[in-house]
Image 1: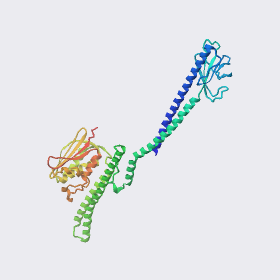
Image 2: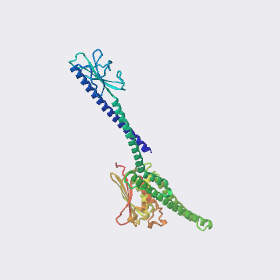
Image 3: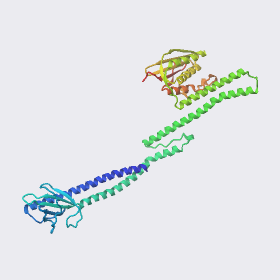
Image 4: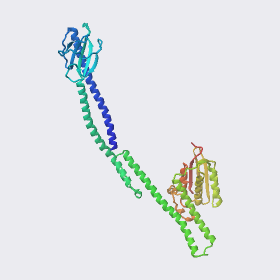
Length: 444
């Protein structure tokens, strides 16, 4: 309704302006025609007087009154018998036609207005006579009024039909939008698999429907991932809690069966495992809130890599080769970058047979960190899946491996927050190699 009303108002304004111009042109054309006829009549009576000295004048078909007035203001010739009062007193010069509009003529019953034109008589008339011709302007007003009435009638019909057509076309064009709105309003949290109808036309509304369906697909995927995440998180938290409750239950029922030191060590191990899962969940939650890129500063990434590599080496399970680590600076969060390197090294340590090789190099635009192990490797089909949350490969299903399935998911989230990428590359046929690329601090 608002769109049709606005379009109709604009159309009425445009049509009114056009009608005003049309009426003006009609009025101007009719006025010019009357003036031209009056001037022709004036020239005729002046020629008649100059050649014959006539004292009676013929009235033309457009002339209401014609007069010859002498220097003293006396009517010496007229197209109307008994006419003795000049119709006007205009200042004229020979060869220069003067004109004026009069609402009434002397002793004339016809309604005005009238166009009065005047000119001085030319030689051989020496008296300084002035010729006057009056022509009715009623035809001019009638023509303008008729044009206005025609414009009003045509405009009313045209605007009415156009407004109705616009109402129909706009309503038809917006009908798919209403269908999309109604469908979206009816979709609840548990019905995100539903989609809005897509019109057959390839226009803005069709693209709107496609965009809405794409958004619903993303929301559906996000909701499904959230439900899966909650279920996986509950499972991960339930396992250590169940173990701890079981051990405490046994200890309470059979006092002295297990040494206190052994029970404490077992409970501490499960508590650490529970704390690690909670810490990972906290990191992921902050990343989901968009808080990855906080408190960035200029850092020497090689110092972080060497520190984390030393920590893994001190555990003595595998050898860590850092001979290819060179100086590299990045802008980032120290704690988050340390978490990236720690998770990569812990993952490599978990699967390595004897050795992990770490390399770090810097180019003009990026810093490349590579962590390679000599373990069983990652099948190509699983190289993208391992970055999903709570994903463990078959060889890592054992709880003794210590992994919660969140480490590499955290790596991808933190690396993405630093404007980088992480992926798995071939490692020459043995083991796996994870490659992290971050923007260099020296880059543009």
